[in-house]
Image 1 (cartoon, one colour):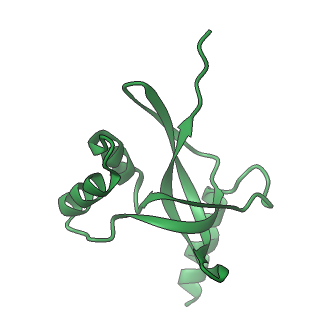
Image 2 (cartoon, rainbow, N blue to C red; image 1 turned 180 degrees about the horizontal axis):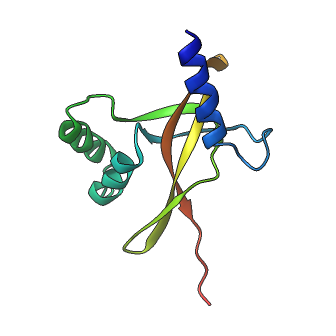
Length: 123
């Protein structure tokens, strides 16, 4: 139990945001690793569920990537990926809750990776 708490605390330090009070809620794709999320971006051509199934099959893990409604805090380390006409940031997130019909339900914090579109402007 103590090791789990220590790992959780260290994970929190790795994804510490610039402001600790910025808890967001959103529904989107999450993956266990950055590599899995990068693969999701490559495979996703307007059908996220097919891309999720493909990544999960490649990983031999039915829960490697999923769509979830979560409460989370964004980490500060991100990787930028581009695909055709879109740019995304893959960001580690510290998930602190699950969004349900009754509101947000707290969970034991866990780190996942999510994808956020970058709005680019023409010069």
